[in-house]
Length: 235
Image 1 (cartoon, rainbow, N blue to C red):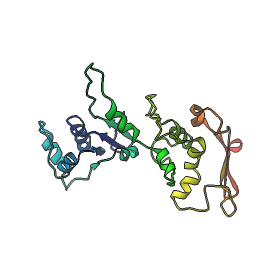
Image 2: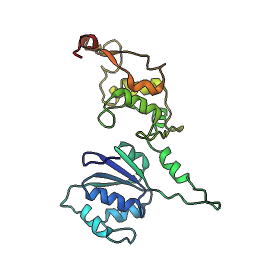
Image 3: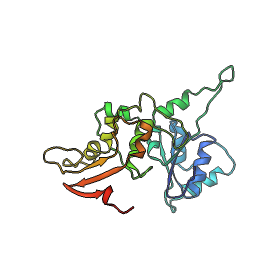
Image 4: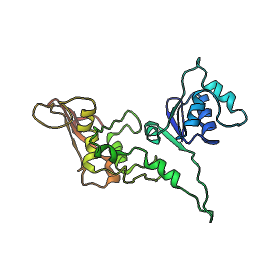
């Protein structure tokens, strides 16, 4: 993970590891969202008071919460709020059972709540995608909405709360995005709508999901006019 001031970071779990880590990043100018389900911890931090004793952390909190400085630390009590961050660090405890195997129920509860697209669709919410954060390639964004892969880690957070269909994933970049923006005349090919569409080199419904990010646009039509043609573009 390469964190720079123009990126945002979420730290889930503001215990003795997570809170000092979040404060260190915020003190370096990184935009940080700290997430914890404990009202006592969140209230203490908002009041500028460390919820536990740890050498040097009160001074660190004082600097981060200084009203004369730009706000670099925000707080939330829902793991789902972390989904908008560029990078996510999970620091919740994993206590051991009697035979020393780790209790991962807390970790699973957190990842189950990250980007629960299935729940959004089932609630009939307008769900739109965008490429203003994360990959700039819209097809890679569509692929990620189907795999929920964490960066290049190979880990896929694809539980029942995240799993959506190909058509739903495509709608997030077309009709769903138009609905979110309240633009009734874009996002679909229908009478009264703009004639905006693209011609691509594969069937996004049938191709392997791992190949979606390789989709190439052959032609773009905007308001009925061809504004891009791969055959006529310079190499």
